[in-house]
Length: 196
Length: 111
Image: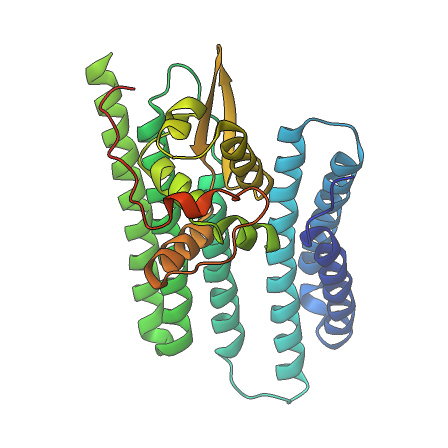
């Protein structure tokens, strides 16, 4: 029997924690309750769908898709839990640092980019007879490394720079990473068209 | 992760991964590059597939192997190659010592 990835255990735990924190925040600050409730409900539905796919006798592609969704839910759960926790801590006067929540969210987002970039060479489409395997593989590795470095520098920027600097720097890093990968895709397509 | 470390601990398997970094290769092309028997080579491929580091695709009569390494695994391979990490040959790598220290032969243009 195939073992379930850790994300299948983490996702329900994080969503349960987020729900508890949302209820507590609702009690302290009732004005944003509906937004939190909708977000949590959507994530819970996605998680249940992912679990159902994993339990069913569906193909490997469906299970891989469910695994990716579950990883996304874990990161969303982390963001929600940290955001709600810090909001609650600020409301209760436990911390006075207003930028802490934003920093934490952005670091988690950077970690998410790193995580997805790391898995990129493993998860892209399989080769077909028409594909040039060497080029596809080179692109997969390039895109993976670029996205991992983008994520790491993005998270580092939010960890070490002041907020007013971290915002533009992280945006430039993110757009730069996307642009580099995009340019590589365009080059790959052009080469293929020229050879066809 | 244990499977990945086990797969990367063997020099032959590391060389296979190094060759696959250049381009996907068939089982025959890879086997020709090493002075080990085909069953041994097959066992190495199994270990690498078990660790999810390579993927096999059937194309007609040949099996095409391609790299399936995450960035972290790729970096780990680079690191191990740089610092050098030799362990006792395992079951699959029984004949590894025969090619210890031997560099892979250069790839022919169109195999």
